[in-house]
Length: 440
Image 1 (spheres, rainbow, N blue to C red):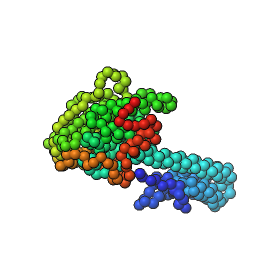
Image 2: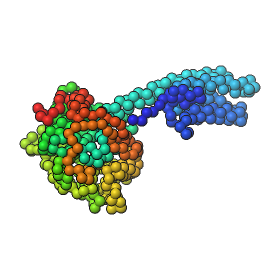
Image 3: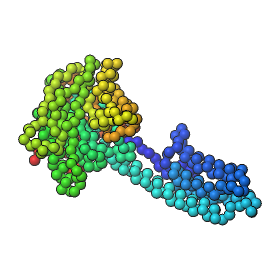
Image 4: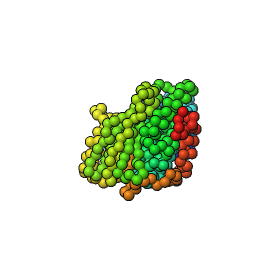
């Protein structure tokens, strides 16, 4: 989590500056108001008595209020009238601007200081809310050790709004009794409501993926959990509109190194990226989570079973990637870009490199202006790993891929205790009513 310090950009260097202007790590936000002050005095001395601009000195504390801290602005609020008095006094009496302009400069300084106080407090509130939302996301997206579940993995999260780094994208890897399961999903909407839904779904996934032998049973547990979450939020009067979530479930069965199971729930189909080319899963989807009540007799979502060659990587993205637009309104051609990249360099199929490539390509295509939160997640079975590494959880760090304009899921040791954490996050953060493999 990036910390942004509050300090003064004034000549005295207090602790509340906005950090808009820096040179070699040092704030120089105090320079523009000072140059303006000197410039006004110099021009006033060089112009005739018919054109006096000394009263423009009232602009100096106003400029300081926009880019300096409170103490820096207060210094200019005092310095501006003092400079006015000194500059006006050297002129003959008949050319002096007099008391009215001095009063204007004084009042302007007071108002500028008050405005700066309001601005700095607003910035502090934004920083506090950013820290809160970052903490929530780190709670929901637990750290994953390298090689967890016999999978190499990498992920990056890019926020569409740099001031509100919170959205409904989520992903996880869960070791279970029947192999390793992977999920990537996207809850409709933004804000804490989306994060609560993501936390509820992740808690259920961690329990169901551990116990259930069938991947479609995991999907049914997620559907039921989403319906219960929506009913709870509606009863509390917090649900706005129709909340739903899209998701992709992947299964890597024990003892079957060449097998892949997948359930797609209204989400973009993952790409299978290998040294010899790129392919997609069959287009056989289930409904997004939360829509199961619309067709209750439709049965479980289809389970896809596809062979997986050694070295092939599963690339999963949220719609922030495929819906990124350039200046002409064209969508980012993800598949075309990945195919060309693999043809040029087969080594790009490694999860870390693949995620970095998609991140950079997406940001380049949209000029850094994302329309939606974006998550890129890549997983690949480790060579020689035919089964999961065990049912327990452990400490470790999540793979880091770049920085860019958005929040990268950074490193950090996590004391994760598998199913207990899944229940706590789902119930406490997600306002849930219990998570388990049997949903009522």
